[in-house]
Image (cartoon, one colour):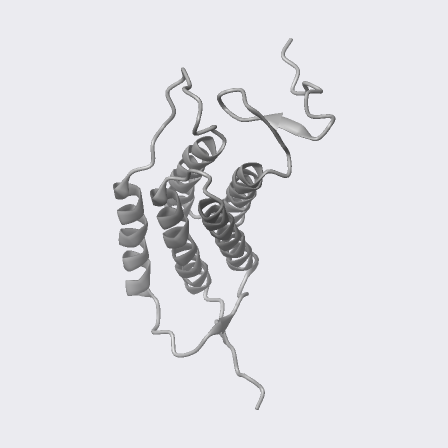
Length: 185
């Protein structure tokens, strides 16, 4: 019987793909843990939204996030024997195309909007914030001279934009009002 627990992390360490052990506080672990958190929020958005096309799009994105997670979980200094999926420029273009399609149905934005509208839209805004955090962590990795594919940072950057548009789109198709931010003067 396969057991999910290994007890190898009980002292605060874990292994990257390639077998190198690092502390669980390592920036690489933080990066793919945050991508995993984002992936979980996208599952919630899909479940709450219950919209076939949005669900399909989110599953595509979740697949790319597993691809990103596997790249982040791999020690760049070790040769690995397994074949990992790759992220491609087309994945960024896919996000842009879908953003453009959703934007065509949305009213022009004339001010900042407060996150909200309905539960699926609000959760999508939370996912957007988690995505931005994942992006910041990946940039930090780069600044610390940890290898990271530049396309990962580009994808996460575009994905956070996509999630903003998706949150607006979910509100729109559910006839939920957008609440403009009115700064106190």
